[in-house]
Image (tube, rainbow, N blue to C red; front, side, top):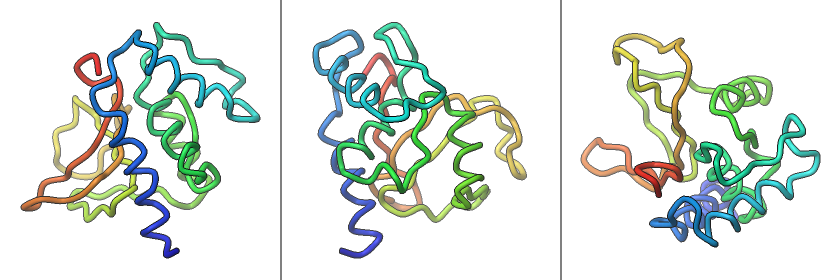
Length: 143
């Protein structure tokens, strides 16, 4: 399989979880996948009351068998730190993401110049449409 095909597996896994509600049995199953990572990032086990977007994308990568290719974490800020350590971090104002890439959002960003603020949310790219990024996200609007 090509790298793009492999990364697409993580996107497809995340897409299967669209609509899962926080606090549901399925939400618990996603957290269980995240909590099965060894060593557990920062030694922190996720609970159902935690924000879970980062655990969502990490669990999708793990379920696709690609955990070593992604900066697995339960914190958006720590994802960036790990991605930089792995040499895979890209900061761009004009993104050209590929399926399976992770996109981090800073709701306070001016969208002008490279953003150096703290990220608030993360999702998995599932495609592009008319110059717009299509992403799947956990913990967005309570699903």
